[in-house]
Image 1 (cartoon, rainbow, N blue to C red):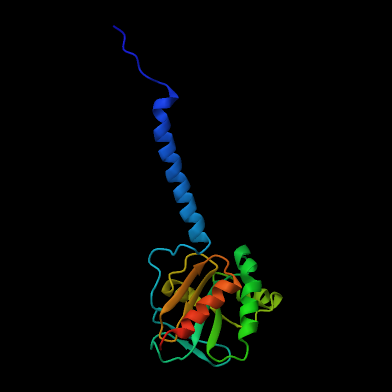
Image 2 (tube, rainbow, N blue to C red; image 1 turned 135 degrees about the vertical axis):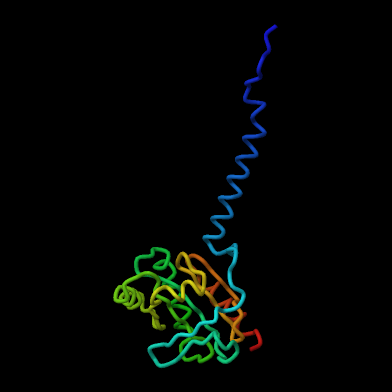
Length: 185
């Protein structure tokens, strides 16, 4: 007696559909994470305990949360990063809209880039906010940055209101700044 093995595609169809759904779901999550819609695991809820000086003599201090009454926007970028170039007009728009307002400070953190090239990029896009070199990658490690652009909006109390990976829009950034302004110190 000969046994027959069913090799028809109809018996494999449910398995193939399930595999397709899993692949599509994983792809959707990856796209949403890249677009900044889905947060990445392990993102900080409070600012890391770091402080760094600015060229104008100011200091951004997260070691003593609440000691600074400003909202802080931290943007990790590099001149060689295409999505960084995509978001530059949005950063410029937001910064120009904040000029003269003392309650927000915006800082670019140069990520794995030549400082002269990064400053040239900032001049090319007319980004008037400060840029800080991340010597040895200490700030990237503190903020858990492994890819760029990555933007953080931090309330005066040191709470992280937004972590956005990928090119951010002016609307997203302003909404997060407004939310951070409303949080108590």
